Image 1 (cartoon, rainbow, N blue to C red):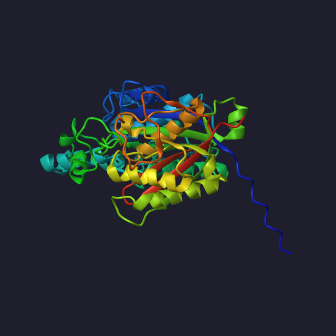
Image 2 (tube, helix red, strand yellow):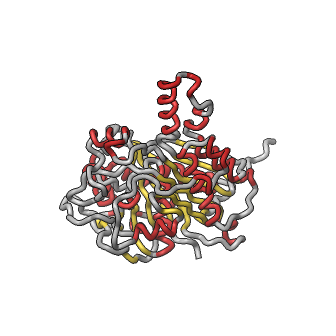
Image 3 (spheres, rainbow, N blue to C red):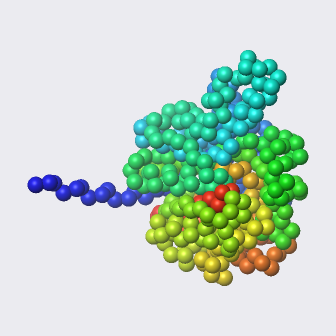
Length: 406
């Protein structure tokens, strides 16, 4: 007689206990939150300011890593320290990171060196430094983890997809701890006109000519290409309680969809993003009426912001959740956006405040969703919140969070 299969193990509850941020001049989530909620915003962040890799890595490691890997490691170490520098079983720690461009800077430099000096002038570690999995691999190396480790590339939705994957890995018992998010550092010039990637986006008319981005504003022109990293530490609720950790929020669900419509423009009325939100809420076991806040992808482009507003109205109704975009502060750091915006959502829940969408001044009559504007964050009674990402290629990503369990 064949023995019956064992009953599946119950899902484990997953919480956020560590946050690591690098964005413009911001180092750590306190600087980040202050920048998001200031009443006197400066120009939208573009390049990292004053980043010192030797603060996080020894000389040999700096020589062997691209800038994107360095900021990934720095953000992960910030998340580790924010969580209280816990002692973990290395085999139970996963690292899942998103990136769009990987070590593009090292690859470009290798081509320039080859043009000038030939084979002898090329850094022998170019392949290792430029590979897209270098960020996650270096985090694992630096934190001493031995669990599942990989990078994923799904455009600007990569960081959000990484958080969703990490959530399921911890929830399902395939890891006890996960460091997840995104890192990007491919801005080469001091101005958009000096930068080949930004110049391409300017020609495509999705990058603004202004020094700031104006999401959801009638006069919006596009985003500001930027760089940065956002890493979250996820662990089980039981483990966090046992060690007395501060819990920022609980991760409840996520989803990943593709529009199948266009490589650049989102599908009409954000249909693909709407499906992602519905699927994420289904995984969370939640109803749309429970959602009080959405941290939008909010690029400041005409089509993206309209699609996000339409998707929110179609799913949640005209009196739906409050929307905000943090890209008015962070710029658009590609795959790092999902990590940074998931951190912003966790902080919004933890602090019971929704950051205002900075640089907004002129209402767009076509944007009918409730966008948080003004010079100060909006108080709210934290319930369920959503962080959304929309990437080139029609990629969509959603993560659902709720307040820390009492």
